[in-house]
Length: 317
Image (cartoon, rainbow, N blue to C red; front, side):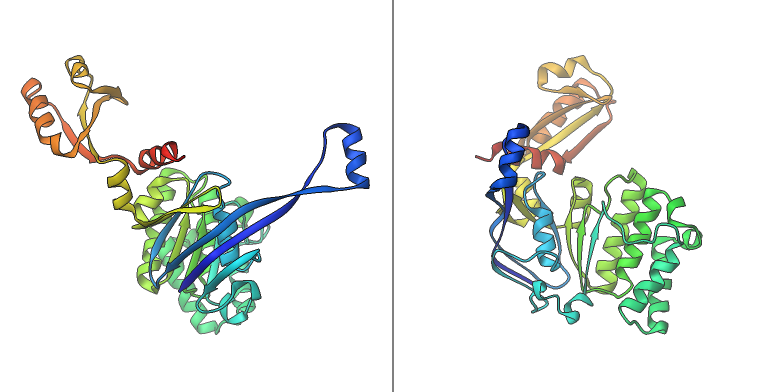
């Protein structure tokens, strides 16, 4: 579905000295420097995969997605989506992909979402009966019935995002590029969007590339990770394998505050005592805690993905 080989993108940006004199000099003789946003990135993604694309701010995630969607031309390298070059903007490809960016919208601000849905039907030249079936399916999946006749400006952020997803999927794309689709949403709305993305992947067989700073999105949706940092691909593989390598511990938690556990390495955190212990030693620590506190409410879990990623980036050279 997606084949990327040594993909690179370099921007030429102006350089200006501070102050009025610097501004005047830049008018007469502009100086520039090259900034490499993406450097020799290579990966392949198969049909129906759900892949998390992670990295710190400025790592090159959005630039890469825009090259995959054909909005930017690569400086060098090769990218193919569905066997076609996105930078050529072939109609055959544009009818089979979609890009959803959480900080941008396509909805018509002063009109109800149905107007945008109708506009997209016309732009993609969709058969009206098929478009209606798809729209009804998406309305049901996203619970949009109460929103269809309200002006977009009167919708909440979460309601607008659900309508954005509906509009982006009316042509039943085979590839979904999702850039921060849950940004700014409350916890419940984030969960609704995650469930919907999973449903679309399963029902339509769509391939999904997801960027998000909310690690709950990544943990719930993407078993494979691509990690980019300073424009270079640093990791491509299973999420669980990375977590096991970076954080091979189990987190034991005890509800309440228990000073007796402090000397055993526990710390107080959000109304509970927690300790990260090697996986092989978890049973021993649990037995010790129960010996001290027979009635304690215990929990055992893996290290959360946001902490795994924080450790990963702290350890990079």
